[in-house]
Image (cartoon, one colour):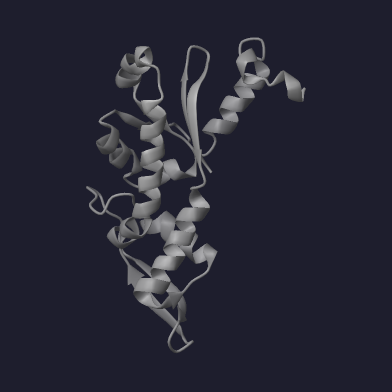
Length: 181
Protein backbone atom coordinates (compact mmCIF):
# COMPACT_ATOMS: atom_id res chain seq x y z
CA UNK A 1 0.00 0.00 0.00
CA UNK A 2 0.91 3.64 -0.35
CA UNK A 3 0.43 5.64 2.83
CA UNK A 4 0.02 9.39 2.61
CA UNK A 5 -0.03 11.41 5.82
CA UNK A 6 -0.02 15.05 6.79
CA UNK A 7 1.93 15.19 10.04
CA UNK A 8 1.81 18.33 12.16
CA UNK A 9 1.11 19.45 15.69
CA UNK A 10 2.72 16.26 17.07
CA UNK A 11 0.41 13.93 15.19
CA UNK A 12 -1.17 12.73 11.99
CA UNK A 13 -3.62 15.41 10.92
CA UNK A 14 -5.04 13.50 7.96
CA UNK A 15 -4.08 10.49 5.91
CA UNK A 16 -4.90 8.45 2.84
CA UNK A 17 -4.10 4.84 2.05
CA UNK A 18 -4.34 3.27 -1.38
CA UNK A 19 -3.62 -0.24 -2.58
CA UNK A 20 -0.93 0.80 -5.02
CA UNK A 21 2.72 0.22 -4.28
CA UNK A 22 5.77 -1.50 -5.72
CA UNK A 23 3.98 -4.78 -6.43
CA UNK A 24 1.27 -2.99 -8.41
CA UNK A 25 3.91 -1.16 -10.45
CA UNK A 26 5.65 -4.48 -11.08
CA UNK A 27 2.32 -5.94 -12.30
CA UNK A 28 1.86 -2.89 -14.57
CA UNK A 29 5.23 -3.67 -16.19
CA UNK A 30 4.36 -7.37 -16.64
CA UNK A 31 1.06 -6.45 -18.30
CA UNK A 32 2.72 -3.81 -20.48
CA UNK A 33 5.31 -6.32 -21.73
CA UNK A 34 2.52 -8.78 -22.61
CA UNK A 35 0.37 -6.16 -24.32
CA UNK A 36 3.03 -4.18 -26.20
CA UNK A 37 5.80 -6.71 -26.80
CA UNK A 38 3.95 -10.07 -26.68
CA UNK A 39 6.54 -11.08 -24.10
CA UNK A 40 5.91 -13.08 -20.94
CA UNK A 41 8.18 -12.06 -18.09
CA UNK A 42 8.25 -12.90 -14.40
CA UNK A 43 8.12 -10.67 -11.34
CA UNK A 44 11.90 -10.66 -10.90
CA UNK A 45 12.41 -9.49 -14.48
CA UNK A 46 9.74 -6.80 -14.06
CA UNK A 47 11.45 -5.69 -10.84
CA UNK A 48 14.77 -5.42 -12.72
CA UNK A 49 13.06 -3.34 -15.41
CA UNK A 50 11.65 -1.06 -12.71
CA UNK A 51 15.09 -0.65 -11.13
CA UNK A 52 17.02 -0.12 -14.38
CA UNK A 53 14.60 1.96 -16.48
CA UNK A 54 11.61 2.65 -14.22
CA UNK A 55 10.39 6.22 -14.52
CA UNK A 56 7.41 8.34 -13.55
CA UNK A 57 8.12 10.77 -16.39
CA UNK A 58 8.38 10.09 -20.14
CA UNK A 59 11.14 12.71 -20.45
CA UNK A 60 14.08 12.87 -18.06
CA UNK A 61 17.07 15.21 -17.95
CA UNK A 62 19.44 12.31 -17.28
CA UNK A 63 17.78 9.23 -18.82
CA UNK A 64 19.01 5.69 -18.20
CA UNK A 65 20.14 3.56 -21.11
CA UNK A 66 17.61 1.21 -22.68
CA UNK A 67 17.34 -2.17 -20.98
CA UNK A 68 17.45 -5.61 -22.63
CA UNK A 69 14.64 -7.86 -21.40
CA UNK A 70 14.52 -11.63 -21.78
CA UNK A 71 11.22 -13.45 -21.74
CA UNK A 72 9.08 -15.92 -23.64
CA UNK A 73 7.47 -14.90 -26.91
CA UNK A 74 3.69 -15.30 -26.49
CA UNK A 75 3.21 -16.28 -30.14
CA UNK A 76 5.94 -18.87 -30.56
CA UNK A 77 6.70 -19.91 -26.97
CA UNK A 78 10.40 -19.46 -27.73
CA UNK A 79 12.70 -17.34 -25.55
CA UNK A 80 13.14 -13.85 -26.95
CA UNK A 81 14.94 -10.64 -26.07
CA UNK A 82 13.60 -7.15 -26.57
CA UNK A 83 14.80 -3.74 -25.47
CA UNK A 84 12.68 -1.27 -23.47
CA UNK A 85 13.20 2.41 -22.76
CA UNK A 86 12.42 4.40 -19.65
CA UNK A 87 9.75 6.36 -21.54
CA UNK A 88 7.92 3.11 -22.35
CA UNK A 89 7.96 2.15 -18.69
CA UNK A 90 6.75 5.63 -17.70
CA UNK A 91 3.76 5.00 -19.97
CA UNK A 92 3.21 1.56 -18.38
CA UNK A 93 3.20 3.05 -14.86
CA UNK A 94 1.18 6.17 -15.67
CA UNK A 95 -2.27 5.07 -14.43
CA UNK A 96 -0.98 3.76 -11.11
CA UNK A 97 1.10 6.88 -10.49
CA UNK A 98 -1.92 9.05 -11.35
CA UNK A 99 -3.86 7.24 -8.59
CA UNK A 100 -1.06 8.02 -6.13
CA UNK A 101 -1.16 11.68 -7.22
CA UNK A 102 -4.94 11.76 -6.70
CA UNK A 103 -4.56 10.34 -3.19
CA UNK A 104 -1.94 12.98 -2.36
CA UNK A 105 -4.26 15.72 -3.59
CA UNK A 106 -7.12 14.26 -1.54
CA UNK A 107 -4.96 14.26 1.62
CA UNK A 108 -3.92 17.86 0.95
CA UNK A 109 -7.56 18.88 0.41
CA UNK A 110 -8.45 17.42 3.84
CA UNK A 111 -5.64 19.33 5.54
CA UNK A 112 -6.78 22.19 7.80
CA UNK A 113 -6.12 25.56 6.14
CA UNK A 114 -3.97 26.78 9.05
CA UNK A 115 -1.37 24.14 8.11
CA UNK A 116 -1.24 25.15 4.44
CA UNK A 117 1.58 27.67 4.93
CA UNK A 118 3.76 25.03 6.65
CA UNK A 119 3.17 22.56 3.83
CA UNK A 120 3.81 25.23 1.22
CA UNK A 121 7.08 26.16 2.96
CA UNK A 122 8.42 22.68 3.81
CA UNK A 123 6.88 20.65 0.99
CA UNK A 124 6.27 16.93 0.74
CA UNK A 125 8.63 14.06 1.59
CA UNK A 126 8.75 10.72 -0.21
CA UNK A 127 9.88 7.57 1.59
CA UNK A 128 9.97 3.88 0.74
CA UNK A 129 11.01 2.10 -2.42
CA UNK A 130 8.66 4.10 -4.61
CA UNK A 131 10.60 7.24 -3.72
CA UNK A 132 13.48 5.82 -5.78
CA UNK A 133 11.42 5.79 -8.99
CA UNK A 134 13.04 8.24 -11.41
CA UNK A 135 11.11 11.47 -11.79
CA UNK A 136 8.43 10.68 -9.19
CA UNK A 137 9.39 13.70 -7.09
CA UNK A 138 9.27 16.01 -10.12
CA UNK A 139 5.94 14.59 -11.29
CA UNK A 140 4.31 15.03 -7.88
CA UNK A 141 5.80 18.53 -7.58
CA UNK A 142 4.30 19.47 -10.96
CA UNK A 143 0.90 18.07 -9.94
CA UNK A 144 0.78 19.67 -6.48
CA UNK A 145 2.79 22.84 -7.20
CA UNK A 146 4.70 22.09 -3.97
CA UNK A 147 8.35 21.26 -3.30
CA UNK A 148 8.86 17.49 -3.11
CA UNK A 149 11.87 15.93 -1.40
CA UNK A 150 13.11 12.34 -1.39
CA UNK A 151 14.05 11.35 2.16
CA UNK A 152 17.65 10.49 2.88
CA UNK A 153 17.87 6.67 2.63
CA UNK A 154 14.18 6.34 1.68
CA UNK A 155 14.16 2.54 1.97
CA UNK A 156 14.95 2.71 5.69
CA UNK A 157 13.33 6.04 6.60
CA UNK A 158 10.12 4.58 8.02
CA UNK A 159 11.95 1.93 10.04
CA UNK A 160 14.40 4.51 11.39
CA UNK A 161 11.53 6.82 12.34
CA UNK A 162 9.73 3.98 14.09
CA UNK A 163 12.91 3.17 16.01
CA UNK A 164 13.26 6.78 17.11
CA UNK A 165 9.62 6.84 18.23
CA UNK A 166 10.02 3.60 20.21
CA UNK A 167 13.12 4.94 21.98
CA UNK A 168 11.24 8.14 22.84
CA UNK A 169 7.72 6.92 23.66
CA UNK A 170 7.32 9.76 26.17
CA UNK A 171 7.65 12.28 23.32
CA UNK A 172 5.54 10.30 20.84
CA UNK A 173 2.57 9.17 22.96
CA UNK A 174 0.21 10.17 20.14
CA UNK A 175 1.60 7.26 18.09
CA UNK A 176 0.71 4.59 20.64
CA UNK A 177 -2.71 2.97 20.48
CA UNK A 178 -3.35 2.16 24.15
CA UNK A 179 -6.10 -0.33 23.21
CA UNK A 180 -3.50 -2.64 21.64
CA UNK A 181 -1.02 -2.51 24.55
